[in-house]
Length: 217
Image 1 (cartoon, rainbow, N blue to C red):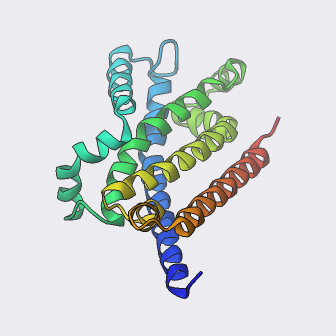
Image 2 (cartoon, helix red, strand yellow):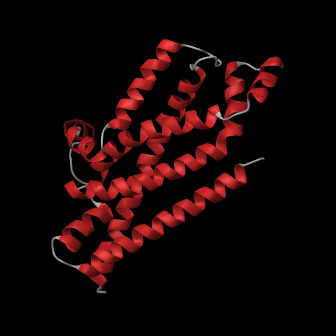
């Protein structure tokens, strides 16, 4: 493989890593509190507010029901408003983040709901405030589930980032389409597939390791 191709692969790998890392960070910063809010406003929970819970649930379900490739194209004006362009790595971060936020929120909600009610009742009986219950009981008890869910989100984002390459999003997907498919370069196509496979395996292994370390059971 020529030095030029290696340079192209390295550049694309870096772009994919940046896209996935930044969009994971943004979706976690927004999805985590959203998932907590969904949980504590649910029926019989800490701060039950059924109307708010239904509205949030409907918005999240709507976000999850739009296929990523359609979302990618549909929000191009919004992407251009935020980043000043609709192509490139920075532009791809916008739809990637928007696609991942509802997923992360549901992952957090599911993990929090698995916390034993006995632990919650014990904390409340000892006078824990809502904030203390969330910060010192719910989150520590559910970190393994949240980390496992975030690992799935990151793997999905790697797949989405390759899809973003179809409309000039940069990264390995863009390289595979422009060189591997359009220029019939089977070696480049094979290299991008192998790199993506390795990337996913690394993410899954790291996620499993962190979830295992945080599991107190």
